Image (tube, rainbow over the protein chains, first blue to last red):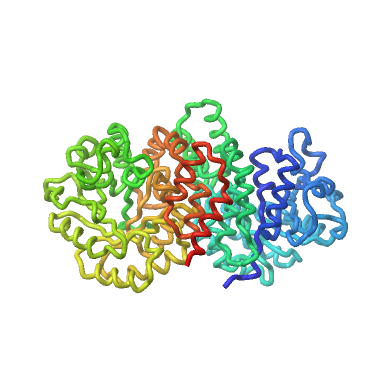
Length: 317
Length: 317
């Protein structure tokens, strides 16, 4: 029997954009939105809305900015809602219409635990405009537990709709997801919990299922796993797993065929040794991405040398 | 705190050989064995020992036959033991030395549930020669439960050392591994349980961990996941996860660098849509492998067409 409360959010364009500076052609994003509507995905996240004064539209594609007009060229209001992410410290508070005039239904606010006050402030602003809101606490695998507890206690007193458990580095094993999911549920009574996993240790789908077992209802996927470094839980695996009869797999398979097989071969997200190592060591994938780029450009540096460097960093104390 | 009873078995050459007809050069297998000795892996499975009268040594490489002399060219007796797999119905009972004269420490007998009498018969023959033995019940995701129960009851009365829970099609989710691991433990008192997972749904590592949580002590991995279709749980992820201080990751990273990155690009095991679909549908990966081969040869057949064909088969009843 399926759990009707479970909502699938596809974040391909938003998280995948970290691999190509959000340079997706409009025709492709239009196809992608239409396919995900046909698949009955609940939310499609079409990018970030960052402050245009801080980033150059010549360096970054339109999905880094997600202006209302741009979104209307590729998507429309329907049962599949549009989500956009905001980062604290990179957001222009004046760049939002009231929800009633916007094509966007939900804004997700991403912040680190130490920035939770900023995150709550931005979330409240968006909530006051009438949007559904989430708070996505990034990289919680790097926090001391009392700091995380304090952040969750603060969030409990706000009107946020959903709080995400985020494994930014792809570090967690299922037992840790189990532990944290129960903590989030206990500390945030009445709120929905979401989960966003990375695949560095090939556990993104498994950890998302673990979250579902522990009563998490908002689950993130991306098509063919496209996302930073090792990528995300894949949307196709989620749709193959979930039992809600509304979901359809074929439209997602068609998108993979048309766009993502070639793109993955070129951009090289997914399970790769340099990302496996950063995940295993609970580190940001940045050095892994640099290593992959160097090797693609002909570097002969070995995996062992990379691993030894990465673990030497740990020896500095 | 680590569990000293946990044994890692690397089956790269045996399961990976299903992707290249066991055509690994001897120098490479020698390097691989030495690297896995340095990594402190407990068992290295160097192939199958099939009946030479049934398969042609021109079509198949030496690791399909694993003669004693061949094995001695690449490996030696040490703390890292040598394992070889036998299939029921493909084995020459006269092809085994007494264990005291052999370089092999363990023979693993693979059979389907319906062949369990044959599997037990072969296992007893090998046990009588002095070898460690296992029974690997393949594709248990396709059996009716009373048939599996009966097979386990039969096995309980034998002297076999280890019984493997095998997810041949990469179909199981963690809850099913949990259920079956507890069944195997309950039905086979005093015996060790092993686990061998395929990665069709990107769950091989996660399901292996689930097995470990449920007191399974023998865990299979292969280097960079090399194995049939979507491949296996990777040895490098296992060594990164397990806490026994004897394990070393670097020798495996060096092998991946030297051999497996290029081989994977050529042979294309790992998470691929055609294999994800057979796993999700609880089917043998054969049609997926045929589809991948066709596409590599220029076929324009789409994922959606393949999926629709695969699910139409289900409609025949």
